[in-house]
Length: 193
Image 1 (cartoon, rainbow, N blue to C red):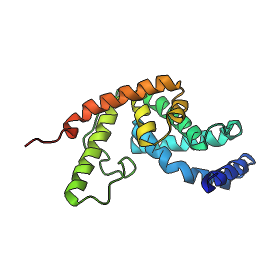
Image 2: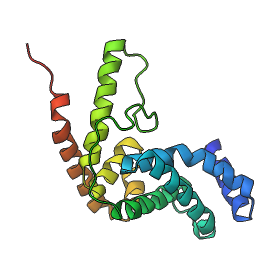
Image 3: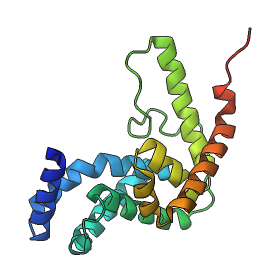
Image 4: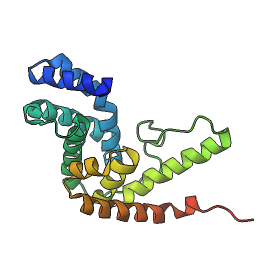
């Protein structure tokens, strides 16, 4: 068992016993990932910040019910997914805004440091196009792509987060990837000549 998992389990046990400092450490361990996932689920920075606070408040209140069959991060992603869906269901259909949060480091995928300036510029442009394309996917397809391909959860973990069977999740993931590919096709084509 890795030291991180051992530390996390110790913190969970302490937090269950009422240790707020232990829970604060769990929040620090997972806050950036939760915030990033909320942004990629379709919330703006202000909403994501607000919802992230609600996610961890719900996690604190529900910690006694956490059974440790799944990883703590998967459980928190599940809460984040549900809270994001709740928030998104209350708003009008999403619009794609061209320049909103273009330089937000949490939203952007990590840049490849080994690339030259021109390649980094193209990489940044592609990341922006990816964020716009994700915003155009239906929520269930976006969640599948975000959890599996961007957040790196296993298919089993991601299916648990969205409350779907693995086969249904795989179908959503496939459809999401195909729609994303179609939306990004202009960026994926290489110039001939």
